[in-house]
Length: 118
Image 1 (cartoon, rainbow, N blue to C red):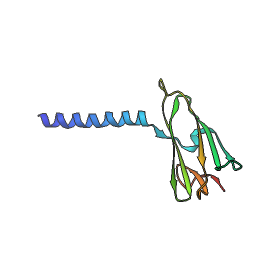
Image 2 (cartoon, rainbow, N blue to C red):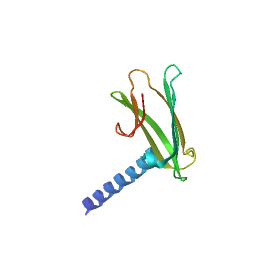
Image 3 (cartoon, one colour):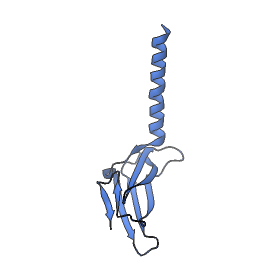
Image 4 (cartoon, helix red, strand yellow):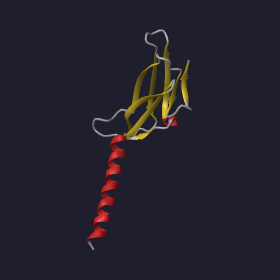
């Protein structure tokens, strides 16, 4: 009798943990969900910088994080969104990306959606 109850309790805890993780960590924003979305090349600066600015289209969501990672000669940008709450109210983001050291392109979410290239 206790075994089914314990299994249900564990499943419930896993589901609640997953929901809390998604609320806190946020989900990726598709590029179409960013309006406006601006990429500015500051090629005269040293080191070379590309600025990326945007806003989440939905007024009830906020930016939870903006990250970048390198894949070969491409920098991949990812913006995550979450529910607005105290301390997390802005739907806007700004990111300066250093494009020196052999960087040839910047992609959004993956290397196939190129938003900037030399």
